[in-house]
Length: 244
Image 1 (tube, rainbow, N blue to C red):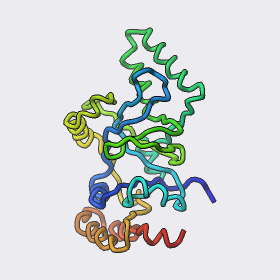
Image 2 (image 1 turned 60 degrees about the vertical axis):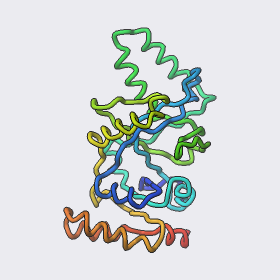
Image 3 (image 1 turned 120 degrees about the horizontal axis):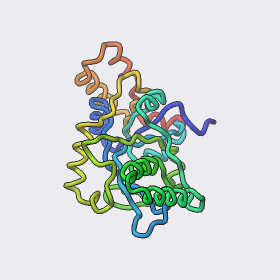
Image 4 (image 1 turned 180 degrees about the vertical axis):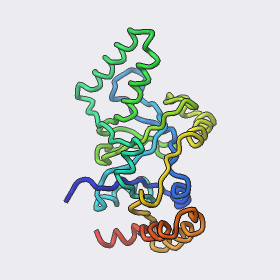
């Protein structure tokens, strides 16, 4: 059995969020990331505007949705590549990579005229790196997570209308975080069309009519054939769980 899929998955815990994604695309939001593996004192977390996907086979979806939620989409990897979505690099804190990042930061610091650009480049690299395991923020609670099992791909939004990162203090300021997330919504939504979608997941069989009705009522800007395609993609995890 292949450890990967030809599809990238994104899950959420609310059917209303699924509807918004179908209608508007993916909304990058600032998310707190564990960077304690860099081994800088008093620098454990940083937040980036991100949308996350996982590259796992359907046989492993159950363990993923139990943590992230039971509504979601499966999208083609062609769509992901076209939109600059890329796998993350998983870092062992026992490797030479943390020191390489610190050395690179020291080099940039020694060139004052290049610091702004240099540190932006480093942050872009860090935004696509994760520890093998670490802490993540779920509903304002920090939980331990084995990240490498997720085979994550990531979209990092980048636009001049908002900063490319937040420190932990700024992230914890809900008003500031929400204001900046509104800017990512205004400037960096990642669109999808019916041909990009391979699966539309709902939690229960009884959710299927709700999503089908939504597609037919609110996505009428697509052709009749495209609407039929979307409707055919709707499947419940309740059904999948009976077959795997």
